[in-house]
Image (tube, rainbow, N blue to C red):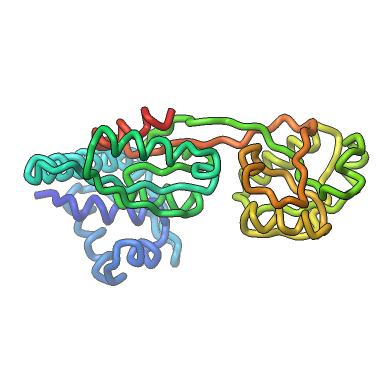
Length: 286
């Protein structure tokens, strides 16, 4: 008989392409995990992976079975959630991941107030994390909804765009750029403070700058917008931030409109078999 546990092992190894990393994700030992994968292959009568030293990749059969496996696991998780909800008959619980933009724009706090009004006593667990971390937690069933900067490139997760806002150029209030025309030549000469981003988002940013006629000269890279704005106030350089960050900008910083065709987006991501409470939250967010 096919066990759901074996399918979870299969999906984890397929997504990491590494037995060791899959074992860490699943909190199991590597050797037993390898044996369970072999057991699944024997049970199905097909080779799921091609093994080349430490690398492990899906075979054609493995690729064809990956999405059905994910779908079956999603249905099983949804069944467990529904069973628990029916047993407890309580107000429910929802785990939400978010990036800073979800709070800075007021989108998440507003939706949470509405959700609590409709479901008094609902338990809300929050986790602030990067986009990639949140998506992994949704796949693992540890988050019901992830509020992230970009939608996932996979069919196993569903994404709804919550908002899109323009970027603003943050400059020192008492510097020349506070009033000076922001011509492409000027933007290409000043030092820039970059906020750490995924390779995909960084590529989008540089492409948008190139289309506007300049290449940003990165002087320093920081982890978040708050740090970038503090360095702008100190006169280290300029930075681009979503318009909503203006609410928390230091007094020594001015946000100016500049000609870069790029928007900061916020997406609500959940599994293909999300709970009714998760779907309600997404509607409140939009």
